[in-house]
Image: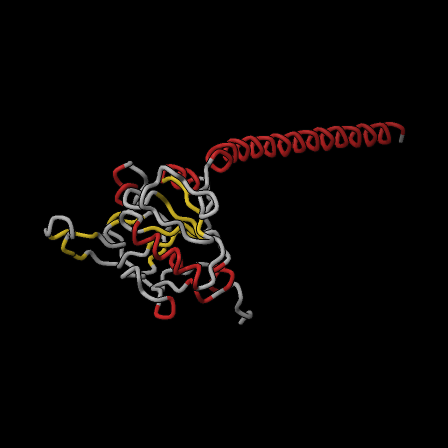
Length: 229
């Protein structure tokens, strides 16, 4: 009887010891994971997000000649835009270009000039809205991916771009007129578009095909205000 009680007590002590050791190891793993997460988060935040400069109509960049600054639009250099994009700073990237390539006559040279569309190449994760020509009145805008459908979309942090930054800067003002509240663009216009992004060697997706039913082209903000089915 005494032997059985001693054996049972030893078993309980072993179980307690094992459980305690597991608990300590588990807590250590959690603390280590949280520490790693904190370190990663800190290194991420203390990069472009904390060091970027922002320009606006109230704080113009005097080095940007011939760059109109629009009310309620926040401007950054293309390098900062890229850094912020990599850090997940923007909720959505809106590409105003049409889907397909097309040709225009260059006003300066009189020569034909190819303008590549979204399907040719685009920033990964960007949404084509096809607001072109850029001076399309706000009440006539019909976005390919309709970010005007939800106030949640309108309140999202958005980066809007085009080929060189000129058309996107005009459309940025149109977005404000449509009720968007957190619009960001690159400058100075003329050298801050996706062509400059490409020249810089930044990330691009080539040869894509637009599919309105594709899940990745249906931003979550569009359904945020809809009642559950």
